[in-house]
Image (tube, one colour):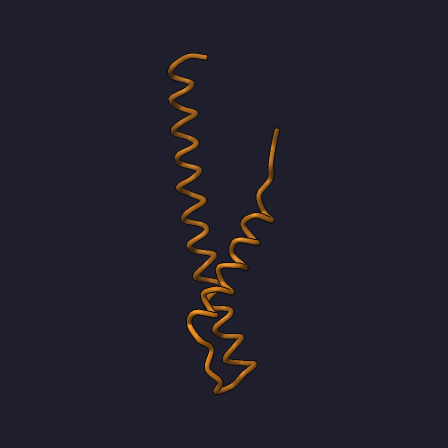
Length: 73
């Protein structure tokens, strides 16, 4: 392996990590909005605590990111 190929592989790996972080944040915000909207629709004037909304959004985001990952060998 040459040094140039190693450097480009490292750059691609860092860019892919950055893209995955941005996508995770976007998915989290979208899922949090969906959970908040659904809780208001189902429970009406009931109160959904922010801690439970964030917890459920984190769980759903992690599951969707892990479920969508493709492992290659």
